[in-house]
Amino acid sequence: MTNLNPQLRIAPTPSGFLHLGNGVNFLLNWQEARKSPGGKLLLRIDDLDAERKRPEFVEDIFETLDWLGIDWDEGPKSAEDFEKNWSQQHRLSLYFNALQILREQDLLFGCRKSRADLAPFFGKYPPEFRHQNLSLDEPDVAWRIKTPTDFPLPDFVVRRRDGVPAYQIASVCDDVFFKITKIIRGEDLLQSSLAQRFIAEKLGWDDFLKIEILHHPLVKNEVGEKLSKSAGAGSLRAMRMAGESPQVVFDLLEKFI
Image 1 (cartoon, helix red, strand yellow):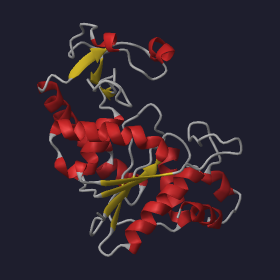
Image 2 (cartoon, helix red, strand yellow; image 1 turned 90 degrees about the horizontal axis):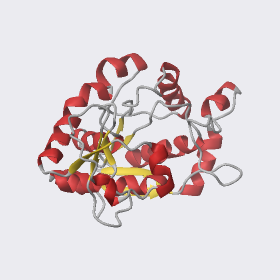
Image 3 (cartoon, helix red, strand yellow; image 1 turned 90 degrees about the vertical axis):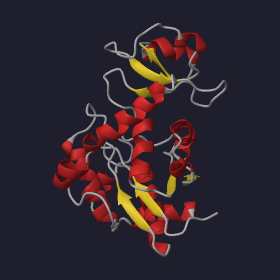
C-alpha cells in the first residue's frame, strides 16, 4: 500500500566527499517527494561518527544539493545551521532512551571483541561470544543485541565501545522522531533495514514498522565494485570543480526509474 503524503529523507554521512551513488539516491528521494501530493523531504545528516566527520565533508553535502538543484522542506539550510540546530548530538537523549528500553528487556550483552577477532567469522557473530561476562557499565565495552538464529546481521552493535549509540539505533530513532513514512535506500542497506525493523519490533514502535522501505541497485565503478566515500570514489566535488554539468547524474538516474 502506498503511503499518502509521504515523508521522505536523505541522510548522508559527512565521512567523505559524496559520489555518484549518493547523487542518484538523493534524486530518487527528491523526485518521489516532489511528484507525490503532500510529499515532503527531510535533510538529515548522520554525524555520530565524530572521528570521520570533517567540516569540508559537511559543506560538500550542501554544495552537492545546490549543484543538483535539490530543495528540501525540513532540516538544516547551512553547515552552521546544521551544527547549531540539527546535528545528531542534539538528539542523543532519544538514542540513549531507546537503548535503555532494550537493556531493561535483557536484550543486550557486552562485547570487547575487535574487528580482528571477528574477521575469521566473515560477518557471522559466533553465539559463544555472547558469554564474555562483561557488565554493560564497564568501559570500552560495545553493546550488542541478541538476534534470532540465522538473522542476516547477527548480534549487531547498538552502542559502540566508545559509548556512542550505533548507526542502527540512531537511524530508527530519527526516522520515528521526524515522522518518516517512506525510505528509498541502496540495496547495500538491506541488512540494515532488517536490523532496524528488528529494533523497532523490540521497542514496540509501530510507526517505524509501517514505513515503506524500497531498495535500489547500486551505482558501481568500472570494475563492478560499490562506490565508497572513504575511498574517494568518483566524487561529485571533483566533477563540480571540473565544471561538469549535473546532467550526468540525471542521465544515470534514468537507469533506476
